[in-house]
Image 1 (cartoon, one colour):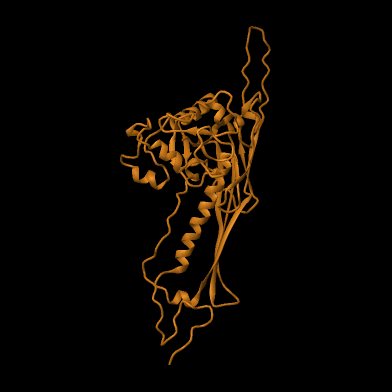
Image 2 (cartoon, one colour; image 1 turned 45 degrees about the vertical axis):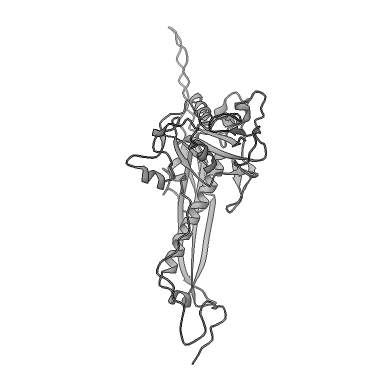
Amino acid sequence: MAFSSAAGYGNLPNGNFSPVIYSKKVQNAFRKTSICEDITNSDYFGEIANFGDTVRIIKEPEITVKEYSRGTTVTPQDLDDEDFTLVIDKANYFAFKIDDIEEAHSHVNFESLASDRAGYRLRDQYDQDVLGYLSGFKQSAMHGSPDTVRIAGDKAGTDPVTVAANGLLASMLVARDSFVSGGASTDSIATHPDGSTGEATPLGVLNRMARLLDQQNVDREGRWVVIDPVFAEQLNDENSKLLSNDFAGGQNAGDLLRNGRIISGMVRGFRVYMSNNLPSVGTGAATVDTNGSATNYGAIVAGHDSAVATASQIEKVETYRDNDSFADIVRGMHLYGRKVLRPEALVRAHYNIAA
């Protein structure tokens, strides 16, 4: 006696209970590497409980030093107890359904498999949002292109550290005006591995980013840079002046690669990470334009481990029965917040490929 498959189960064949057998082996999708927990100050993990909670972070007070001469009346300084407020105001979620019949005919644990993938997607979205935030872009809600420049400080400000205490500093942007006399700060830098065309080499861009951090008295220990695959290709070019001992190797190379770090040593004082979650504008960094571009470029970002604070947690993952079908529903939510603490310790660069 043959039975017809129920509506909605076209993957189960008609016949005498001859179901499709799912292989025990799973074809996993390629995954991007999450790096934001490596480059941000995550000391505040675990100090949040609910969406909308805040973490108040005490800021180191500034001390005024005055000239003293004999007989001078010493007036003690009143210290300002400034603080930052890290608000947990970002939330993403997932929800999926595990059908009883499909689960029964599978040799793999679909719920576990899907939950693992969901966890990766939440981390990936978190990574994209934080890297966009650090780079000065507000990226669209879910894995889209950047749309709006977030904050730009006053480049002519008297004190660049206090111009944009809650954002980024325009003085910490490396653009075409950094290498070309009369170049526009809104145009990207056209880069070439050996500098034979364009306006700078990739190493020249990293040098300039390091100099800007040096001028802000940012500690050299704890610096990092996040680059995209196009910039990484130029660094790895045979004509690049990057030394062979800068490339991945040594005892911890495997661990570094798993963490998104692509070079085991330091390059111009930076730990080097590569990510596909950096923002890009227009057709991106691979756009060939020897004179730079204001509409098509990629962004890379460098900074110090203390520059940005993040607090992140999964509030809950729960499973419950679907009232309208024979299935389980699994859903979860990720809560997090991010805050620029030291804008002078973040520097961005906009670039594209030179012909």
